[in-house]
Length: 364
Image (tube, rainbow, N blue to C red; front, side, top):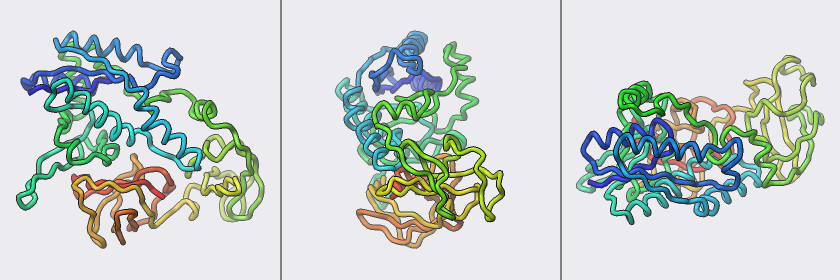
């Protein structure tokens, strides 16, 4: 079976290709160039990543294809990213990149190359499931729970999952690096990439200012309405943010100690006001429920109302017990067993039933 592996230059995708080769697949590596506005800048690693991919493919003895999806990325992912930030929300472009680029543009390209399946270095799993005579494809959590990336894949559908292999589903990260080292792949100790792919390690606000002009407004204390400072734009701040408020030394009120940190609690979009509170556990930072829109259910079926599920209202949050109070084609109302900290409009909430990822939506 011919499999095209999406290779990023990191150790995970390199080992995904290695494992497939050892399992007897006809493997081709494919490097996607998704950003080119400043790919020669200090924060962009595209050139080095391509060199690393070429080296891995040479060691493994597999062919390498290079494809430029920069236009598709700009149209399908980056344009939405800017619209969401301009509206005062905090999007997760990696979720959209997976559904629109890695498992759509890349999948279509791989099929045109004659592939039967594609593979990536994601920590997730997929399995066929017989549901009363109907074959479904389920998205599963990875064995390595500390690296599981199913959260970022919740927008995939049955057609996409039917064509995907996740070679790292049952492999732990520590073993991935050991496998790469034993196979002579020089990326075995390469640092994992962090942050949004097209931003890299650069200062985020500085990057956003290149595309969205500043729009100064007041920073107010949510509890007493005092003006505490000035922000340069609501788009540069997110719920729960502590750093970068530029209001150091301002004392609090009787509710919190004078020296407790300040956090972003709310945005008044029409009046361009940023509201902040003092103290990590301030009630304004906690939510018992949320509304999700732009829903995607992987098996094509809505979750049952009033059943207990687990949910992640953000990637790094442990699974949280919840119920789906109501669900329709347009929206889902989700209630949590315990209040959740800094629930953020624009981020994704993802539902699970044990190890099975059911899907999710965008927090409204």
